[in-house]
Image (cartoon, rainbow, N blue to C red; front, side, top):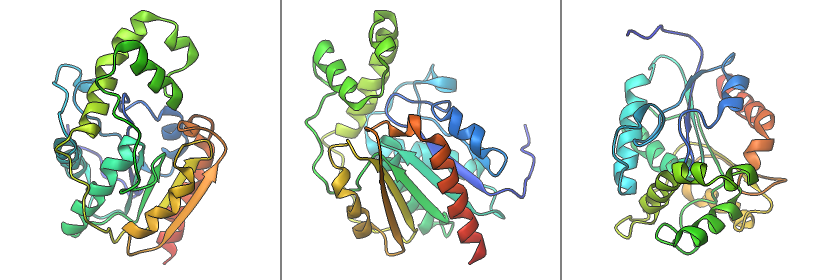
Amino acid sequence: MNRIASSKPQIFLLHYAGGDRNSFRPLIENLQSHFQVETPELPGRGNRMSESFLKNKEEAVADLLKQIKSTRQKDVPYLIYGHSMGAILGFEICHALEKCDDAPRYFVPTGYPGPGIKTPTSIAELPRAEFFAEVRKLGGLSDEVMEYEELLDFFEPMLRADFGLLENKNNQTPDIKIQTPVYAVMGKNEKYALNIRNWANYTSAGCECQIVNGNHFFINQNFSYLSQVIRNLMNAAAAK
């Protein structure tokens, strides 16, 4: 099906571990009147449920990059937003797009303090009870979901695959610096929130950082705030 061209800027929303193209539904609803909202997703979920999970970060970056390139409307500006895993992958995606001479106007990472900060102990291979105890600490699954074994059965393979993808021992921390401005946001109860200024080491452009109330999934209570930030960034970029 041919896509209908639009003059609206684009925004690409990169989901977190265990997420899919619908993970940011409230954010999409707040942005769709201002942006062409694009929601690439990794295999093994959503519209790609029948596909096998990916094994490492390099494969995930390549997969998402292919989707972004296929839906980019070159005559309009765009932003990339990613939460947690989406922020980790989005950083390398920005770098790849810059090399293609198609840099985003802004990169908005949330729930991640940038490369080079010590990460928690690997959890992908933990026994089920311990694994979900760690997931629960992040706040990604509600108490209601945690009470139903059937729902845990559904989410467990996807979560383990995504955490395993990030924890793969063959992953390399990229020795790169992007040229795209960064606007980073973290919840004040996140373990590495005070390291958020680390992002300034990984961009040669501007870097703004904010810490807001909440845990790793502060976004669930702050979709209106995030949509306003994103709209303001695009308006500021357009005015330059």
